[in-house]
Image 1 (tube, each protein chain N blue to C red):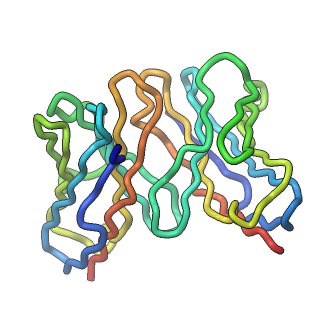
Image 2: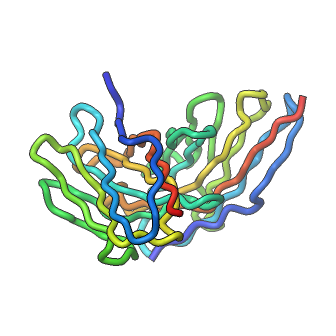
Length: 114
Length: 112
């Protein structure tokens, strides 16, 4: 069984400030972990993924995330927020056998203030 | 290169009716997964199709059924619609064994 908890349904930062979106997961098998972004009235776009290997993963648009097995966490960060980063972000986990069957968190809405 | 395309984009139905949603996967992809995203929630896995068969299923009742065609496109059917079926239905495609999903923009279903 797998589950994802995203801490904080809403996060607000100022433009240029650090973005930190928290994700904790539970998985009975080695996990694949993902962060997706969703803009209004659109589907999900993959930001980054962790499968195996390096625990610090870099994604698109300057985002990165670090897989910490001991903490069962996969937090998403970006050093400097941009207005265009305002969106909803979803963390997801899947087993290594089937990424198509992913379990998603409830999402975090990121607001960026000018 | 077209990504995942879904139709219709929006539709309104009444309780008890039936609906069919369609999905064309990204070129080169052979596996299709369907998700339901209720307002304010994350997507929930409905089922996955590969080689024209349902391979995995989430915790959804039998009112939800699907089909995959030889060209890898897929349909999601929902019978006896309930108010609670109102949601954004997302289709995601992938290549067998790959660990990356490509999502479509979704079909927004409203049940009145």
